[in-house]
Length: 223
Image (cartoon, rainbow, N blue to C red; front, side, top):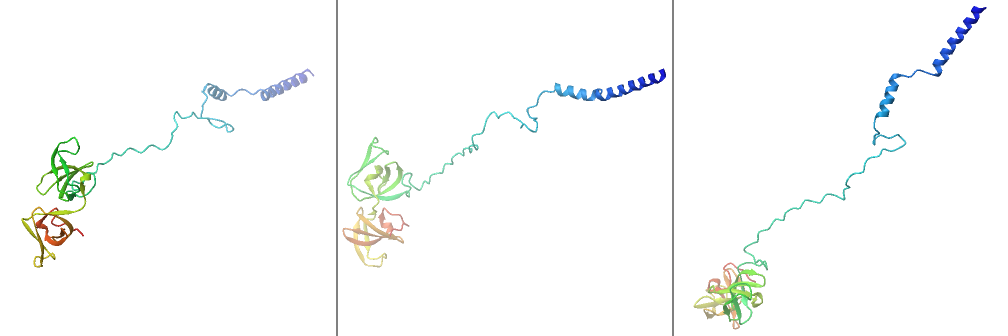
């Protein structure tokens, strides 16, 4: 009888030990090490749970727009020496004196002294340079200086450049002679073509070779 009770106690004790193993499991050393490492690691700002979005540090500077284009240095275009710096008209070119008195100065300005005074209205002049309101001109003898642009006109005239020039009724030396004029006479220019120019002097009209006149180029065409 006593043996049976002891055996029952043993069985009960064994059952209690098995039940204790189920209720209080033994800790896993590997899991303990992982938990300790996770607790010691610093918090990451880039990791987040699925319910919370990851946060990132704001940028130090925010761009205001597209980058400015790099400055391209301006390329200076060389000036054509055959054209005036002010009017862009051909140089040299011919004009005429607008008034009966024009002061030719040593430089382009009123502060420069007067070298010559032109006193013949309508006389042809050659423009060789420009500066502001001033034009450098010269006459048939190469004498001149700087005159104010208001003193010259675009009306074309020529001066007889022969001791006695003959003007013909047509641009042909075999045609009838219309009249003659001596050196220095100023004529109003009408037209030029093929080395001939038609002019008017005191109401008379005629043709003369370009070589007999000053104030026009040899190949110039004027309609």
